[in-house]
Length: 154
Image (tube, rainbow, N blue to C red; front, side, top):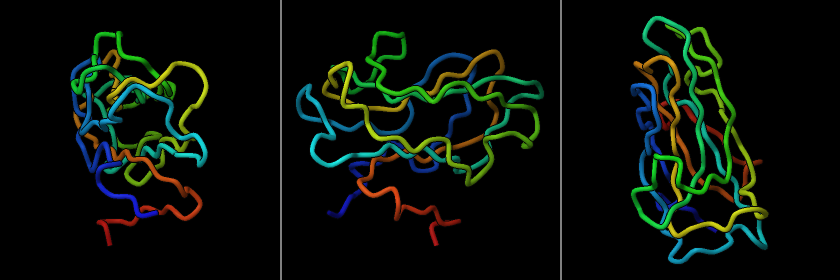
């Protein structure tokens, strides 16, 4: 199966933002609210495209795979969260766990729990301190074993 950019949420999409929750990149229209990934596993891959750093002081950031009835996936807590990376601590330099090329998460889409709503997207939750730089790649793939990130798309 050939996967295309319709299964891509973010391509070096900035996550620089003030504290709060933001919708990143593009959303995937599932057509209807339904289960996805049944039969053949589908994986979410999140990767740092550029190092994620904050405004001179330690802060926190996490990413969520969420679905909603609207293409503008809600950032007010009402969207259905299917996966949460957990919180990462960022700092004012680039000596943290979210450096360019680092893989944030590779997880099979959850098939249990909440039903997926029509639109699927990536939420970025920034806590305590503004994120001043950083970008992520986020996409779905069937084959994680053969997935590899290449510097500068070479």
